[in-house]
Length: 163
Image: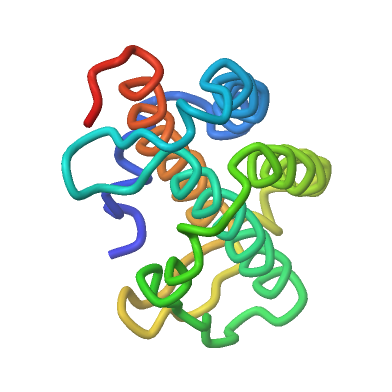
């Protein structure tokens, strides 16, 4: 079920909009602090590098922002899922700093919309083919939790506990 999505659960009782705002600044700051060499490090053996995590976050920010807009415009629509591994095929060639700046810009645009939404808009739903009905509010919670998940990976890399 959408309400029990693991990423949404990562939020606990935190306000998703506050988390989205905080991480909007924190993630590009980590990318800057890592620098070009740090962006090539991973958070665990065999996992994505920091640059690849940043590319994934930029892609997901666009994809999830689109989902919310689609739910608002076309309630009941079927959400198009995506395979992150297929999207990641070119992540090894990505500029991590560019990805971080793209993430920040798209997050800013998404937050401008999300902060204007009323309760009735947040309750509009679409159908996810794998999870069933998801409201715009749930998708926003998923985005926030998803970002927290990857922020932890980036912080691990920044802390030097990496491969």
